[in-house]
Each structure stands twice: as structure tokens, then as C-alpha cells.
Length: 217
Ligand code: MN
Image (cartoon, rainbow, N blue to C red; front, side):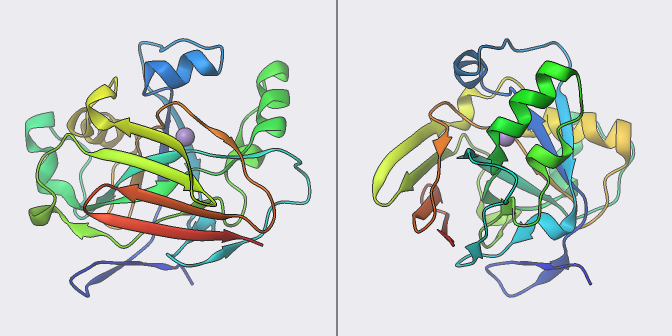
């Protein structure tokens, strides 16, 4: 059975497909030795990658270099296969903050060999997300993101620096995949990604809206 999104007003939705966008912040693309490309880079995590706030995450045995990536997460509330960016908010149920945990060593090898990122990105527990704030309470941005590890600030960014906006991402993904209620979009990470270790506490903020606390087992 799929896990469920917990909204701050008590409503729930089953977690669907988790779409994730790569290189949506130029400064993060640069720190990875890469460039922003014309079309969005898209990968997918299954619902089993989801973890709720206050969960403990087991690092995968096949990696020795798991990195945190703090991201604005859009939770979809309506079904659409075609939507103009100006209509995107009609299909957004709410926003939250998520961490796109990435087995960087596995991803680097996959990139070098031209292989997919699924194992590096989509393992069980790789997509913890906070409680969802209903769209009517989110404003329309920009929003600030931050992430600390054991109290030390590691990432701070603004969605104003995204290469593609919330509205453009919803429109693009709808046209390719069809979006369904409970699907979500990880919108990419600002710079400052780095490793997490066993026993550490990771705290992510969608500033003034959501806090997500995750313990690394
Ligand atoms: Mn990411």
C-alpha cells in the first residue's frame, strides 16, 4: 500500500509518482561540473522512496557517499495531460520541502557509463518530505529553502533562482507524463550539497512554512 501525504489541514492523498528535476539551479549545476540544459532533466522515484517527517532513514548498503539535496516539492491535486503554465495552480494541491537523497558515488559511475540513475536516486527512503501546506496558504513565491546537518547550515537558497518555475514544470511534466492527484515534483536543489553520515540529524526548511526533521540511522 502506498504511503500518504499528510496535509497541515488534516487532509491526505496517496503518494503517487515522484517526478524529480535535475540541474534547475545554475549554481548547483556548476558545483557538479555540469551546465543547465535546454530541456529539463527528469527522473522518477517510486512511492516507496517516500518517508514522512520525523522518520529515521537507513543509508543504502551499496553506497558510501549519500548526499543531501534540499528541494521545494509540489504536490499535485488534479489530473491533467495538458495545462498552460498560467493554469498550473489549478492542479497544485500544496507545497512542502523534501530531501532528494542521492548515492553520489553510484550516480557518478552511472553518468560515466551512460547508465540510468535509478539505483543512485530512487532507493527506499530516498525521498523524505514534510507536511504539505495547502496551495491557498503558500502564496506564489519565491520561497526560501535551507538545510542543516547536526545544526550546521549546509544549504540556503531561493526558488527565485530556479531555471524553470513551478508553473513551467507542472505544464511540461503534464504534457509528457499526465499528472495525477498525489504525484509530486521535486524541483531541484540549490548549491551546497554534501554527504550525510550515520547518526546525524538533517533539518530542512521551506522557510516560515514547513520543517522536515530526518535522522540518519
Ligand atoms: Mn535533486
